Length: 534
Image 1 (cartoon, rainbow, N blue to C red):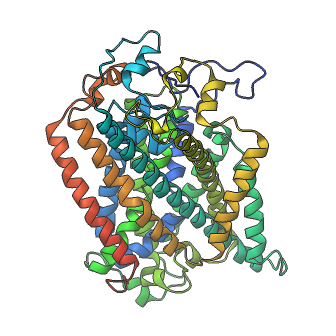
Image 2: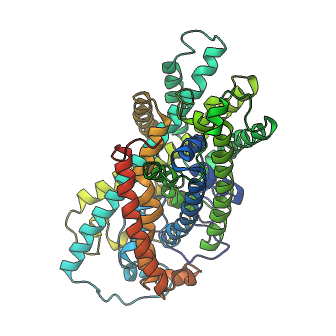
Image 3: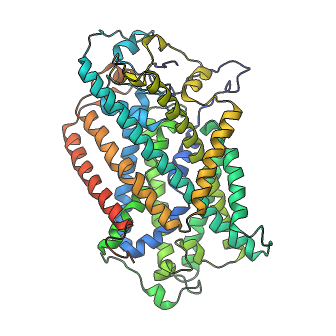
């Protein structure tokens, strides 16, 4: 295990320049371009579940839905910035390791190799960084408490994240099957090819294969394709509304088209809307990996891309929610819709191509989530091995996850760095991991039939936590001045990002309380406590 730590500057990426030698498979620069980074952000958030929004608009009313989406997306953009504050000082693709470091403060650090140490030990091992006095800040008892807190936080967040990742992947599989099966049936392709199980088998093979990929750089073409394949159907949906005089002749009756909830507040509808709105913007667990692989990374650069992504997402969400709902009215909640407005459009060649486009997008998004989940679960396994090897060490605040100080070393070698991140596993190991993960995802997808239900429960699992709760805790610590003036903040190249802000700290408390309320409402709504949303 090695610890990699070096000064960050605006021109530097989290992955260093250079390579591990011409013979190494990672010898080429693996970092992502600005466009690939933006595509990864987009695909991580926008999926086929965007076509569930008209259903949400009917339950919660259109204007309230759009207002809530604007608020949630703004919160999600700022949450992305707070998340990468951890990425700038702790290079790891694992969300839990990045955010726990920021939450517990500069005394505690976990990297992808499971190494934990105090800043004095870390900086003392790295040339070119200022030396710090190795004066202990905590008593052995305090270190043990922090160790236990660190272990609890990291494992709790990992459990939350990977469950959310798997549920998202299940939704993409279900969406692909629901889209492709009717197309094959319409083409009279035969009972085997037209069956759901045929597509489940195909997706299992595809998911296993794509899970072998190591990084976002390997999938850059798929990420760009994922952007295009969801953008085109969204624009087509808007064009149809205007070219058909508001949806006339699209299949909905005049009564259904006239039954539009503009600003009618229904508490059940609002509560049911929360998890979907939050879940549609909650995939910050992939942000550390995107930041790790971004060329010319800086917090400012990353935040600007997150802002652009948020604006694009809001425009797209608003168009689909508005024109999809206005085209069909209350028909969006009919059995024919099957939870997605796209199912209400004619079975013409054009619209079958649009549905097939969404199936392709689902495969592109599935690729992102399967690779991120496989890498994350492997890091979780390595961390568990370290924990079992050092069950009661108190050399550092969370040293049960740690090796000794002699593990720390400087490197600018890509191969070594990617070993730390777990990206250089053999083909055999990656195949076994990917097959097991694909089997679990496809099996869960086969056991459910509603994309809306999957989307809603995914939002319940990760929405409030990743958009509101965890970012508000990060903000509370950072704006409280815990990181201001520290060597880590200075060496990030952007120390102003870690400056104390008393008002921001108070706002973080308000957001945290709101997140708890939203979490409770979302769970109760999904359990049907408030009755039907529509």
